[in-house]
Length: 366
Image (cartoon, rainbow, N blue to C red; front, top):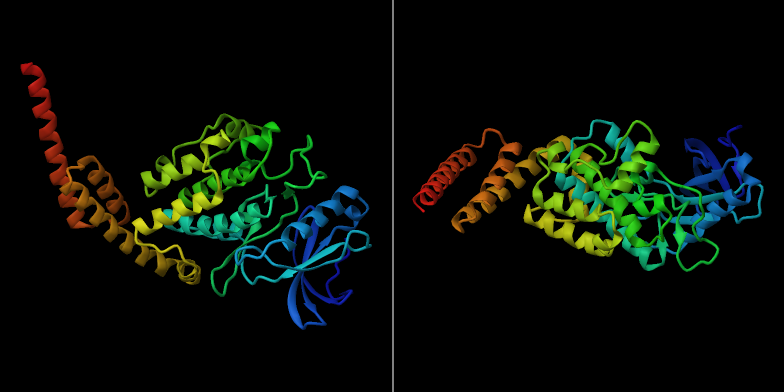
C-alpha cells in the first residue's frame, strides 16, 4: 500500500507513518487550521469498501466521542462513513505503548501493576457509565505519555455500545485471545464485567511479568481461560503478595457474578491496597516511575519494605504470627539484607516451633 506520508488529507498534513495494524495505518499529522499535532488513523484502502470495516471505524468514533477522561485517548475529528479515505483524528501521544514498555526490560512490581490498572479501571468506569464495553483491553491498546507518565486507553474499534440494537454479538470471535473473558469465548451476554476480567489479566501480567493464560496456540489459551486454569500469581513472582493475589483472583473469576461488579469497585480496592503499602494512587507516582524506573523502584522497594515491616510488627504484637511471618517474607524478597526482618522472622519461627511442640505434647497427654 502506498504511504500517505508527505501528502495532505483534507485539512491535515500527513507528516510520517508511526504505526499500522490489520485495520488501519496511523500517521503523525498536523491540523493546518488549528495548528496542532494530531494522530490520524486511516482505514486500509482494501477495507474501505467493506461495510463491516467502515462500521468498526464509525463505532470507534461514536464510542470515544462520548467520553472525556484523562486516561482515554481524546478524539478530535472523524471523516464520516461515506468517504474514500475513512479516518479518525485523535490527540498525538509522544511515548510507547504498554506492550513496548513490557518488552523493553520491564521489572514486575505489584505496586506498579496496581497503579497502572487503577488508572485504567477509572477510565473504563467512565466508558461503562456511558454504556460502552471496550472488549479489547491489552497492552497494545494502552499508550504511555512520556512527559508525565499518563496512561491512555485507546482503540475502541470493537467496542460494544450496549444501548445500540445494531451492535449485538455475532458468532465472530473478535479480540486478542490471551486477554479475553470466558463470556467472549462462550458467546454469553457481555457487560462491564467483561472488561474487568481483561483488566485482571493485565494486573496479573504487570504484577508477575507473565500472562495467566498461555498455550502453544490460541486454542489452548482459550481452553485455559474457559476452564479458569492459571498459576497462582505468588508462585510466578514471590513479590506478589496475598492481598494483591486475592484482588487478581476475584477479577479473574470465571463467573461474572463472582467478580467485582464494577471497575469502580476494582479501582477502590486497588486504592486500599496501594495505601496499605504507602503508595498513593495518584498520577504523580506513575510520572516518577516512567521518568526513571530504576531510581523509582529503588525508593519504592525501600518505602514498601518499611511499610511491610510496620505491618509485621503490629501483627506480631496482636498474636497474628502467621501473618507476621508472611509479611516478613515479603520484606526479605525486597531487601535480602534486612537484619531487623531476619531477626524478627527467626524469633517468630522459634516461637512457632515451640507452640507446635506444646500442642503435640498436650495431644499426647490427652
